[in-house]
Length: 359
Image 1 (cartoon, rainbow, N blue to C red):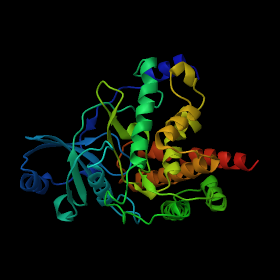
Image 2: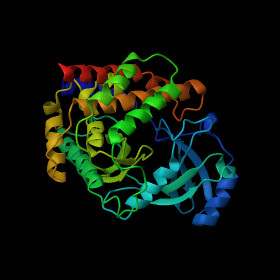
Image 3: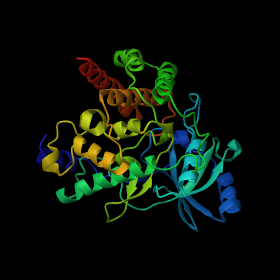
Image 4: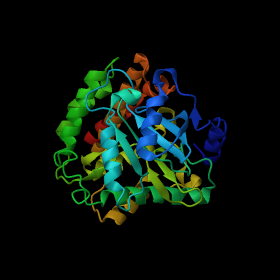
């Protein structure tokens, strides 16, 4: 696809408001929350609105007399084991607040279900730019490459953090990351399955047999992509990395591969760049992006088809979980069913990369 065609396609997408009225499935009594905010933050709650984005943990804008805040909570209803771990989000945000990794400042965590029905946390509200399309249609060509390099810089900073010194030595079990993750997402797939997805089943068999040798541990975000960060209003600089639900101690190349998924999948399936003329758009290709990351972190090893197939497997299972929540009526987003339905195409692409690696 040419740059001009991409611009025309994106221009047809309506610019949607950042917040919406709270969805029926996510409504809660705000009075106990107001009491808590007054006690813990000395803030008067004036209004609660729901953020439009988010497929997992419902996110809300709190308007108070001390400024705007952000609240993230578990969704209502029956949850899969280890999913929607807002306590882990709050912990890693707290640990990173003292580092050079850009994160919103966490303010309070509450696990008392009597307040709003589920555990939740409150953090500062950052104001900046969120880019929803990896093609960056809202920017002129010359501003796109710096945005990608700023994203790369933020990922490198995260992976260079001394996770033990940051107080995260027991955040998860270090080592043997890929096998643990494959087992975890295999269980997740079996627990959330609402339809057949043959490519997921094939990857369940293929991935454990093709884990690369060697192991290392860093803090991994788990969902590191362009639209999970806030950029400075005018500068090519990340001021806040969002959505830490999948964070863990893991292999940095898994995070890098996830961050590069946009290069390997089409925009029709999952926010991809596959088929675009990247040079015309002014966006670095995958090789340049990976080289920039390796230069910043001092790495010599880069991602392989295994890493890409692995993260596509994870994404496919996550999308199938989104679809399951949509069918159950407790999804965080009104677009959940359409988003979740892409799980088959994503898994198919993962299996395509896996098969090509074996040729």
